[in-house]
Length: 490
Ligand SMILES: [Zn+2]
Image 1 (cartoon, rainbow, N blue to C red):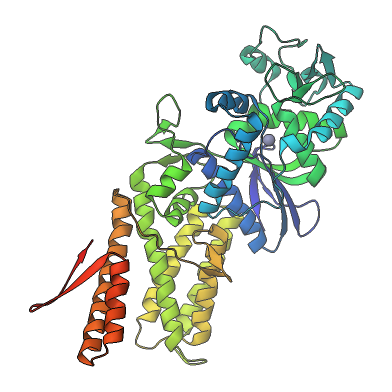
Image 2 (cartoon, rainbow, N blue to C red; image 1 turned 120 degrees about the horizontal axis):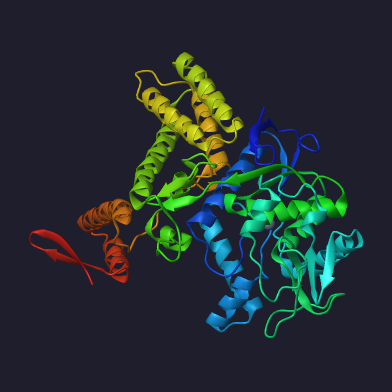
């Protein structure tokens, strides 16, 4: 039984889906005006992990994540980069997929874009006007907040508080400072679409209502996003959607916590915004993902390079565990072995993992179960009597199941894949990774030199020359000296 914390009711609730066995999920995706940073990455990885766990638990998940490709930030950035706003959005959408793939975040079932849903947005605004929840002022259309009495139910804010904080733009045609724009009239040099109210473009909030309602309908299961979106974005989504349809919008609202950098807020002005692509150049992706799932999604997460360096070592332990299991499976016998204890411990660890994830997706506790598994495997494969093939296969199944949920390593045919990247970096983290690569390269080189020596002794000049020429092409020159073979890089 999965329980999840619902921002709407401010309590943990049992997951009861709209349709049995199915979960419809919507996540507010990135505004494509820049490369994604670590804060964006946290939301991506958290909701990807939740999706994976729902699937692991047997649900069929429909996962929709939009791209905000029409926005003020895009227009401003396009001017800076000297690009057309559409081209700029396309560029950063491509970059988003590179980074998300790098973090082993699965693609959504649908990635709708605002620019491709203008008719749906216009239709929704027309409904709101017809139902008198919205009004036209000049070429703009506004949502009338006071017409929706439940406004504030998600964020828990009262209208008076919002009024105190409301930003009143001097040129705005709004009747009430609380109202927000559904449609903005055309300004020179901006992307514009025709509408019943004249040329213009949608406001930010209406897009998510239009796309979520189109693909998931009303009263869908889980709406996700960062905690910074609760107000006003998600509050406005609820108001627009429920005012237009007269039905509940989403059943559960999930929000992930902030990322701080050495206990400081991540911000451009401090200069501590870390881009995903820069971090992935420095650290192995599995370690970055492990760092991101190592804390419960609602808690704040503090970043510092040494935390990821700690994850690098943890990832290596997982990798070693997998190799030990694979090797032990190679020599284990069916139906024979010392099984009792390991078999029982595997069942306990697996149920603890499920209990942790059922409890509002507690990935930190779930990760601890991975380390319990490593410990049990280490003891068993080094024991005097090896467990049976069946029990080791069960251990492998548990390992792969945990990885399928947490997404630490990419998979092929249900098994984790370990990537070794040859490093040219010089940071500490890469030194750890690089040392291993170099060590392996040295041993491979030594092996080739030995094989060549053996070939020479057998007067197999073809093989000996093949190795010498092959190495030369790789930039390694061999010299036969009276002391033996020397090599150098050229
Ligand atoms: Zn949204």
